[in-house]
Image (cartoon, rainbow, N blue to C red; front, side, top):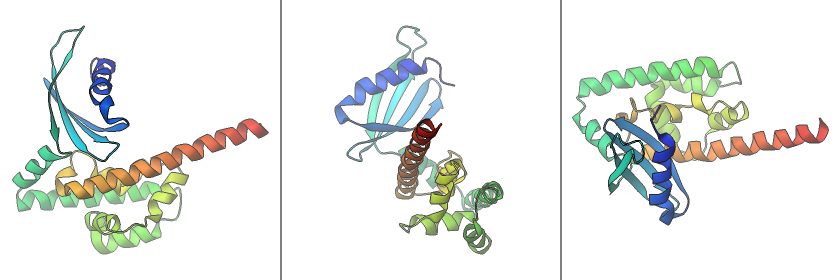
Length: 197
């Protein structure tokens, strides 16, 4: 939990209101610094670096804004050895199976299981994000469990070094689209319940 989070968000909105609508994608805490990844309405990817001043009235100070969404993670990716990448891929595959083991309680995800058995979670996601069709995400929307998707798994800090900036952005945009769809579905259901309740 970020201390004085409300003040940090106030600073963000003040700094980036010039871009119109924007999304805060990730906040990485490296005290006393915070790296905040943002995507703007015109698809610009920015990283804002804030310093924690320990002043209760003005706890955060903007240090710089850089172009680039996953610049630091790409540097980390370059530092990974072949063996480290191999073990990280194995962990991703294991976690993908764990996600599936929960998914199957909600709907039929046999196509995903086949893909996991044939390719593993890492390559299943690589293949999936190269296509415009993702039936698994549509099913997960219906049961409000997008958190179980492989796209969400890839965006976890641990696994981001395995993927390119383009792949991570595709994962993010997919989830963003389906999250909005999920919100609309919930809102529609609530309205129907009020009408017939």
